Image 1 (spheres, rainbow, N blue to C red):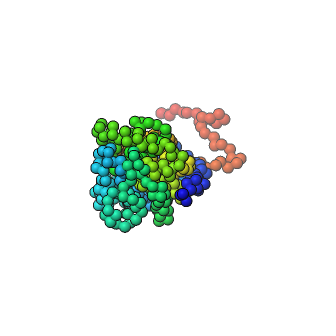
Image 2: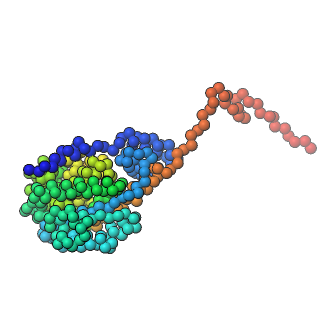
Image 3: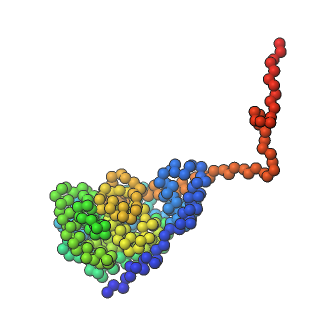
Length: 378
């Protein structure tokens, strides 16, 4: 039997400081730009102040991009535009600086951390700091078998908790969270459909590389079959992740929960991060208060999950590539909100009139006499 008690997270997670948020709102009302004129940037600045417990809000100086990597056996059914076992190439692209998210991270000077949880490749294919948390080689084919054993699911979730602690202890002040997976959106869709009580067709998207109609139908059928296996274990979130999740998804769930415990804000990327967040919400209902939805990926499963958590995407740019790209695009927006909240000057206070001093008399007012106008003399 597992020694991990997920109920502990409910007691450990607090909401961001409501008093600090009210102070941030009051300060915003005193600034020279009228409240509401900056749109959602006002809300973002106030949210960040509450998360930090500081007014004025501190600048975001040490963000970190964290990407959990894994292959999923369900990809062998042709549900993804990428080949089964292809997550290894995604990781190489990031580590070599050639992927879209690597370019964005480099330009924004954000360090990148890649965590191999279940890549389908030799464990020595990547450096030790990438592979040291690996649970297994690939996750199981969730339409006919469990993704993980219960022991593997617990190990993966604990790894996510440990990584969150490492980031918090190192001084990271904001996490950009994404995944590097093949088949991950299928597993994510199963989790969302199971937790939201919907059918497979409602959550089945076309993935980052836009699969064709035949692949979409295969994906929909795979999600339908996996859903039959997920519904009996809905009451046990760890067993749910073992049955239809995967090592990378279990680790992301543990990571999100512990970030909330450590009061470390997180920007979520696409449907995989949203699905893990939804599982984490089921564990601890206050946890979503520490997360932002970076963007709308167009995946129906993501939209369903975000709606259930009452999280509104910051951006809608049609970015479908995944890999943390959309969340990285949202990071400058969050940084801008912090800068405006902290640096906009306040309106000057009106000087108070000393008590007993009469109001100055002005020309034309009642009680004053004006000099009669005289015409000039020749």
